[in-house]
Length: 426
Ligand code: AMP
Ligand code: MG
Image (cartoon, rainbow, N blue to C red; front, side, top):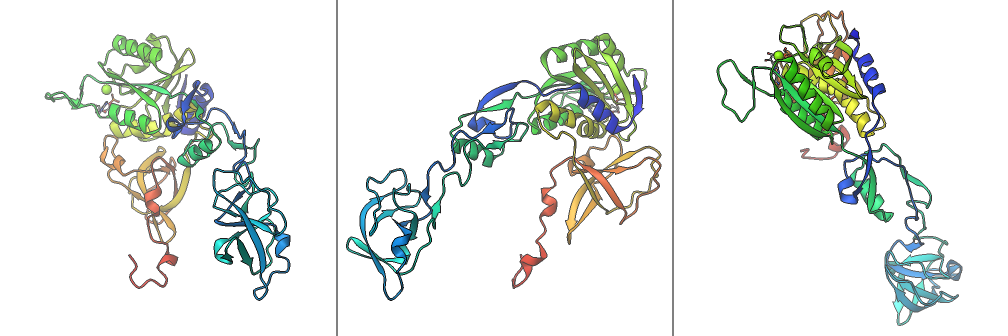
């Protein structure tokens, strides 16, 4: 068993131990937000035939060679066709076929001129300029070529990809199965939010935060409930979790106190402990164990510590299990927009929020940084990474951090250019 390892080592040790869970087929609508489990090769082109880009007339470009505004060329209109129908006639020299947007290009024609550019008189049109072949024709394969890979295995399926798959006539999509994560909380003091709070007891908050996070990510959380601080009960619950889920996560009881039973419970459940403690604050008492290739990870019970370690250690793992190609969290650099007066003998992660002003990324603390303080987790989308051995961190200092939440709101500011020329900028 390794002890007190670096966060990145912990991430890598765990990532090396897991492979994406199984595959399944889901309907097109269910596929949104899932991860592709196979490369998707186009079996048709989009579009699959040359078609008209607009409402107009299909004709032969060389027929317009002599056309001028003062001497238009006259062409006889021999048919009319629209999207969804093939024309019966072939365009021969001196003729044209009226077409609507999306109509297949009639045989013989090689250019489309738009309605507004011709004058129609009876069954003929006047064309006033020379046309270039292929103008206003959407070529077959303009969007997708038959045989092309449109999306790779491990890609997150988004609404535009759903549209693309539909456009290829794909009705069922190969995706990875949902990852099942069993989550349990240990602690004799814990009660469910639905129960009455007795003296000395607290509501179990960590379990719900972690289940919600897991759900948000597209996983399938299994509620293993509250377990007393007792080895047998905890180990039985771990065994149940291993039977039903792909990975088991517990909170609480993983430190050095008399009732911190999780490590013993892991061993009692037949698992082998891989490491204990990660050099970081909050959340250093993390224990990871393995049984039959399934991981069991014990996190600190302190609500904020549990969420921070879930984000930094469990999320990359879930992403790999889900089949996502790049499971590690993204990092960001920015300007520290606060004063954090404490020194950090240990590596520390500060809960912060990205705020962009005048093109500069500022990382601003979201509140008190205590282990049990959840309030500052609510607005947190960045965990600022303060190296071990750092002094106080001051306003204006350059720092980096892991992105753990949605940062799009940070970019809400109006770009300066948009305001130019506006009398009433909003
Ligand atoms: P532990 O990790 O078991 O030593 O717990 C550390 C602190 O977090 C203690 O004050 C616990 O009461 C509290 N705690 C443990 N588990 C939870 C939980 N699931 N929800 C809220 N607080 C918890
Ligand atoms: Mg406890």
